[in-house]
Amino acid sequence: MRTKAVLLALLVAAVSLSGCFGEEELIPEPVPVVEEEPRIFVTDKTGASLNIPPVDMEFQFSDVGETGKEPSIGITSSGCIFFIAMEKVMRSCDGGQSWEESQDPVQCSPTTSDPYGWVDPITDRVFGVQMIGLETSWICWSDDDGQTWMGNPHDSGTTPLNDHIKLASGPWTDSGYGALGQFTSGFYETAVYYCYNKLAGIFCFTSFDGGATFETGGQIIGLATTNGGLHGAISTAPDGTVYVTPRVATPTVIVSKDNGFSWFERTMGSDVNTPNPRKNSEVSTDTDSNAYHVWTGADEGVYMSRSTDSGETWEQESIRISPAGVISTVFPQTDAGDPGRIAITYLGSENSEMLNQSDIDGNPWNGNAHYAPNNASYHLYITFSLNALDENPTFHTYRVTDDPVQVGSICLNSGDCRDIGGSNRNLLDFNDLHIDRQGRVYVAFADGCTGGCADNPNATAADSRDGRGSVYYLASGPSLYLADGELQPLY
Image (cartoon, one colour):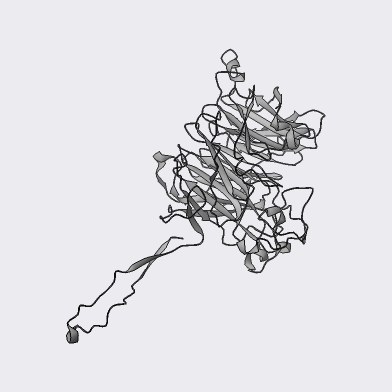
């Protein structure tokens, strides 16, 4: 997986007739030709290729062994990896060599729906959240790497629909709810946030006791009320800023600087917008609280906008992260380390030859994964930028999967799926990416093309209906924290 240089010595010299005519032999300089490895891309902020060596990285795969649709991933300071999807919390404490179920069925939810997981990067508390029916969620947590659990139900009221649940945590601020901690004892070390959507919009709550109860918060008014309140993950910054991303046509972030007491909106990306159907965008923040918002644009590329003032203002000229040759993307996720050092993952297709071919409905395909042709193939991509704050950042992208993650379309609208040989809703709504305390990148995803599908170069959509829980992590390469330098394999 390295770029190779091939020297073509074109010895087009004059025939050596010096013995007859006394002329010197002309030997031109060798011409270096760069032979690019098609699975690695180095691109600029427009997606165009750059003629510079890629950052040397190797990625390790791990099969979780359980269904993995809509996975969440987090890593505790001890190195235990938590993979949360569907009915089980899975744990690996040996670098993904083996996985085991880590959930107490007595304390955690007795039923399962729309799960979400989170590992508090400050306290190591592991959260598993499940939706029960349409009105209540069950939030469970562990403070000992998943050995034991506690949990409580959270009643969201009788107004439907409690859905798309998300949880995260971050530092307390000196204003809003955070100011109460200066006068109230018993506050948990971090603020814990819990958001979900109802038909009326996004509802977000703040917990003072580490996620045991959520008594303060409510509906966010504004753009958060559109599209039924569908939204992406909650992101937090070291300075306590909180971000939630609504699923709307113009990329938008909803921001709180007082631990969820109040919120404001900022838009960006009107030069590229978002496609329809669309999925979640996400924000990552670095150690200086700079923010990076990533989303899939209307042309199906992955784009980014940056904020260097904790979400107050954002660049209006979008930066393309995905290579121009990746003509379809979905499920972009991101995390960051030190300033300018970020990682992004997404599913993408390079099947440009299929553009304008007829999809299942007879319409020309424009790259939207929801309408992809029967034999389009999607792979998992991981992108690093070590200078993402520069005026002209560089992006190093690896296509890490040898066989496709999905063949055919990916349903992005549950009420309008393309059922070719079984529902293509098999990957659901999102993947996940997080870094550990050493700045090592971990990606959780659902693999839709396994077994015979993975082994068949002529696989079609009907063969690609799995949702196997899977992980890739950085085995060797640059940490997203400068002080940790070059990371070596875990095992």
